[in-house]
Every structure is written in C-alpha cells, then in structure tokens.
Image (cartoon, rainbow, N blue to C red):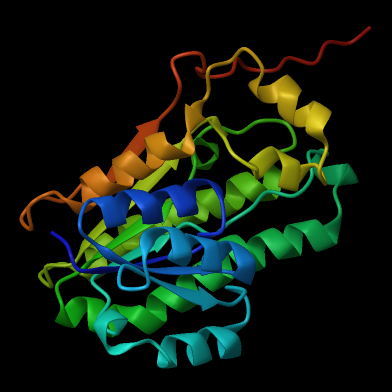
Length: 250
C-alpha cells in the first residue's frame, strides 16, 4: 500500500521519523505540527512533491480545518492517518499533579485524536485506507506518576479496537502501536526541559529509537489489504514489566 499519509506531530521524534520512512517507501506525506520552521526544513530536505507542511496545533479545530481545506491537489486524497501527536506532562502522583497538565494531555492525546479521526473517516472509508494510532505500553501497565497519561493511552488503545469493530466490512485497517521506552523529546517535554531527567532515564538503557517505531509504522502500512495488525506492543530488550508495589506499616 502507498499513497498519501497524514502524520500528526511531525516536527520531531516518532512523527518526523515516520514522515522520513514513509517517503522513503514511496508515500507522499502531509506533515503536521506547531513548529513551522521544523516542518519547512522537512519539506526542504525531502522535497515539496513528497511532503506538504500543514502548520497547526491539533487542539485547534479551526486551524486544522483551514489547513486541510488548503491541501494541494496531489495531497488532497488521504489514504493513511498516523495519529502520533501526543505528550505527557509531569511525573507527580495524582494527588500532587497539576490539573492543567491533566487537561492538556486529555485535549491532545484524546480529544484532538478523535476529532481528526472523525473528520477523515468518510474519506478513509471511501479510499479503503488505514488508521495507525500511536498508543503506549502505559495503556496496559500502570506506573507511579503515569495517572492521566496512561489513561489517555488506554483510551487510544480501546478507541482503536472500537474503530476496528465499527469499520467492519469497509476494508479500512486500524492498528494500535504501543511502544515502551523510546528516546525522543518525550521526557524533556514531560519534565519541562530537564536534561538530567532525560539522561537518567535513557542513559545506558539502549532504548528504542524514533526510527525503530517509524519502521514499524511503515511495515504495518505496507501489509496487504486483507491483513490487519490489531495491536502491536514493543519494548527495548532492556525494559520489562514492573513489579507490584507493597506499602508496609511500621
């Protein structure tokens, strides 16, 4: 399968790597994100015939609709939606977390994702396209400080399964990709730019890379039309399931 893919959160990390890998495999890509200069650099590097920059915040539906309404003809028919845009904010336990951080994660990871998916579904059904949602192992395995972030990714996973059920018979393929530790800007964003926290998390761990996940996305997208990958969970070899916590009295 190839055609035109829309990749959200394409200014860095997994999103940018997905655009590069899909273009290398013969796709045209609509790369979306807030940072225009990064998207423009991606277009300059890969070519305007291969990549179109659509600058908007996924939470801003009016800006999103304006950008999608202004797509060049070669990019107007979308065959693949890669819902990658998302973030985690804060590492505090729930009782100490900032409500604004929770709301931002829900607006970005859940509301914006379902809104864009809803908008594109009629065309994806018409074109017998595909949806790949980037969830997380946090959808399945809780950890201290994961609270709302894990909840949003659990929603993405369940929403993906629900889409599969609803789209039965349409030919549209739907996949939830659920990575574990990937070294990107993720931890810097989560900690407000704390480089020490980033280095402590990834140092010596041999985490997965954005290219690893992009390769997986491209592989899923390239499966034959009769084959659907429902869910795909990935971890680096160095990462495994956490143990249970036990609080003991004095």
